[in-house]
Length: 148
Ligand SMILES: [Zn+2]
Ligand SMILES: [Zn+2]
Image (cartoon, rainbow, N blue to C red; front, side, top):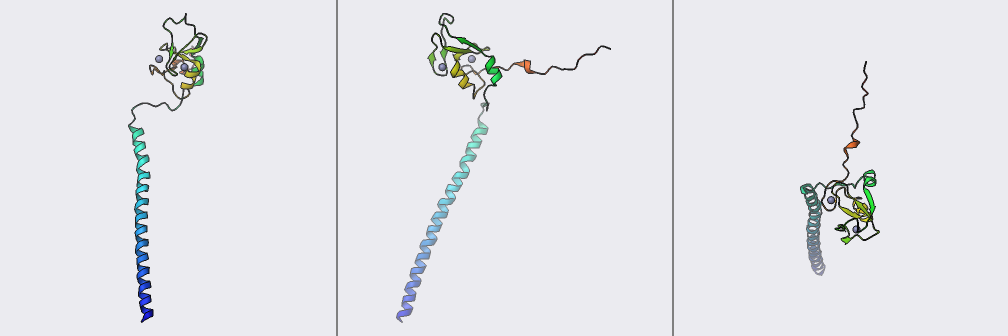
């Protein structure tokens, strides 16, 4: 009866290995499912966060033509009694630096700083007023009036 007892031992070992394998599969499936759930839930959370965001986020910067129309000046301390602090790099403008002045609010910034800002924004970085919403782009009713 030695052979049959060896078969029993082999069967027990086989059964034990199957249990271990099944347990490993269970653990793997559980981990995989959890990470998959996490991967699914995270972007959903981000999307709702974007939807909830009340700020009107401009996805493109200022138009180049509008940017070109903004006044550029060489800063002179004598011209600006109170001085100009560039709100983008947080440093005072000094004599001879090129500045851009916003027409609506009068805020001034370094030319390089504000041009970089307008690559992704269309409002003043200080007061958030929209820059360059000129109504002159509106097409006139171009029908010529004909007097018969
Ligand atoms: Zn600056
Ligand atoms: Zn401003």
